[in-house]
Length: 193
Image 1: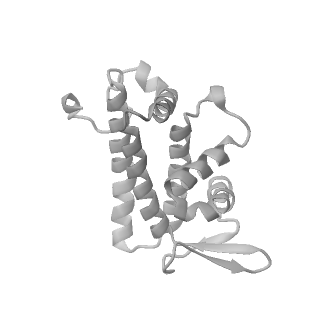
Image 2: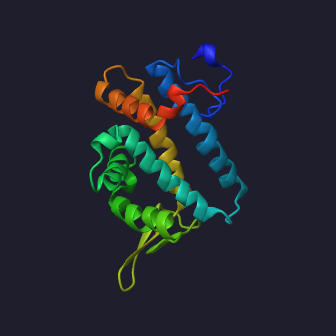
């Protein structure tokens, strides 16, 4: 992408119409770094807990979005329950340390935050030493360290894009391309002014 040095990695500013497949992968990787990884890392370093709930929401959204890219999700192959499957499969494959709580993260963290702005059963605790702690009240209850989950996700993103860079990963690359073309369809058909 040497001829695309002026990219902002914002779809409404960048001309995506001429990108080749490897350039699309590179553009999304750099976009994730710019709009997600760097800002969350700056926030993490600040040690400010005011937006920790928002950070957990972003983490859950990122896991699901990456699961959709990994599986090539479009409206044509959408089936009931696929969001959960994409979310859990991305965790299982790229964040195995969190796979035991993948379903829990989806239902009580991701869905609770997305649909009711609440962690329905659990909490975020930046002070715990491990990724999560299991507690038994009337029901199972997990305390999750958002920073440890973010660190896992950051490594998962790196591994996912490294896998995409391997020419032998045809299915993974095709799935990425399908999701990219689905998600960025408007911007692939319309150059920014």
